[in-house]
Length: 478
Image (cartoon, rainbow, N blue to C red):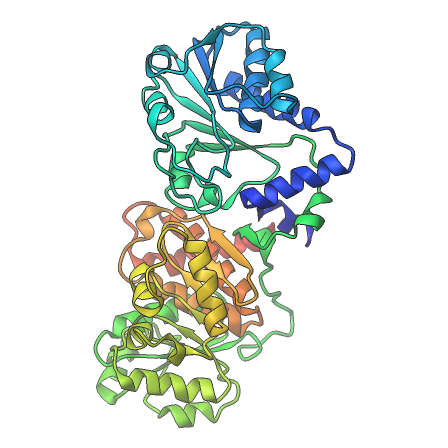
């Protein structure tokens, strides 16, 4: 794993526990890690909030131990701090030793105490909690009268899935350690965490060799855009062919715009008939439009990457077109109408390089992703042997070999008609330029989101392709 990808690694609660264990086995005392974690929490509180009446809600485990350390350091800095313990830490544990060093006031673990606090430090439960938060814990967290600073995750948030187990409070700030967890990026976890601060507590990078993570936050460190050499020509930069439907030709045109802006050297729109072809020719002059049959287009070996689905109808003919292209050994980005045509029969899409379903399309293909989008996308990718890009506010890209990336670099205003067509074209362009499917889909998702951020609210799909030029320029420069 390269250094840049290492920084993007996401660790499940189980993987984080293994990283801690590897560090301790390597000679780093657990107490030292707890002291560093508590110090990071205290520093974050002092940087983000003014001194105020602070209540640290401490659980019985290591999360609570971090809270005791933070309370002690905040009190030493002159803050008015009290601790409310849910239950005492296990005797002899690092958390118990941290608790014995707390000499300040103790308060009942009760809603009225949280209501009186200007700041509540939620150090009750960590990311690996296996039971729902309810009863006195839920009531006390819900009663917080001021902002909540969460240690690792807001109590009740599943660090692997981003789902709330029972009740999970809304934090203003979450301090986590060494590496983020999938639940910090998956919704609703990303929203519940508020601002996320990643703190270094002294864990060596070498523990990642023991853990061997397979999930990453999507970003430029995870992939590298294809180089543009001085000898490049339009065919060496990749040829993308997009099948257009007879009715919604605008979808195919948007896919073509995405492919062109993402660097494809030659983009062809394959129209089903002369009428559709004439409509398509009224679009961008740099796109080739043809009514040639698929068999004739496949005779050109340079037509290696295809987009099938945008603007196409959910019918057998769409699946037949895919079958012809896939059986010829060409790489296909399957989107929209093609996904709809295979509803209930996802095996008919076997051979696609990348599938790009939104949640509704995914559900019709594979069943509901439920509360674990990461697991569902991985299972679908393994089932078909294709990369699956499950679109949403927390887009997941999953490869058949188990690798996955979570894309948190996208604004909510991307949720508008046609943006998915642009994305499909972008993925195809990066495939055509030589990127492997997982990297092409991940890069396209990040670039797509970055272009949308540049456009701002009010974005329509047509804006995205133009904004890509600046995004690509800056991405290549870093």
